[in-house]
Image (cartoon, rainbow, N blue to C red):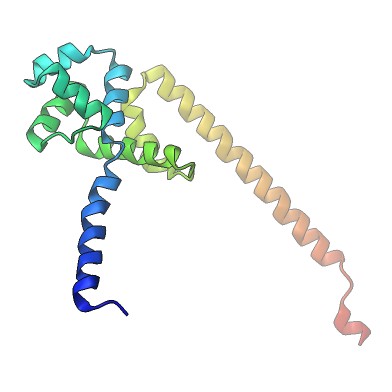
Length: 158
């Protein structure tokens, strides 16, 4: 059985690894945002007051940006921390092949990155998916209800 000191060391190790692990896709998220907006790395670096090589370190995940630098970069992109971390979370899921999503929150955040026409098309598509799901569910419920009514009453045979 581990001593109390060993357990403390394990908790400290886990706690110190956890924040870094949860931010492993922060850099790629910054790169994705910059590319989506079509802004050069040099332009972002200049406007944020950081060197191009420093921005590159952020985007490749070699270094985590300090909060003031990150805030400047996000201001340039027109994105808040919530949107950034939703994107980081999505990249985490893709990288670990866990594709479960929470559509309402993530679509709301992602809608910041699409045009009005794309947003309208996405709304129409989502409405069609909801209608399809409703019809499909309704059909299954009706089939289940119909088959349960036609099933013989086993209580009457006994």
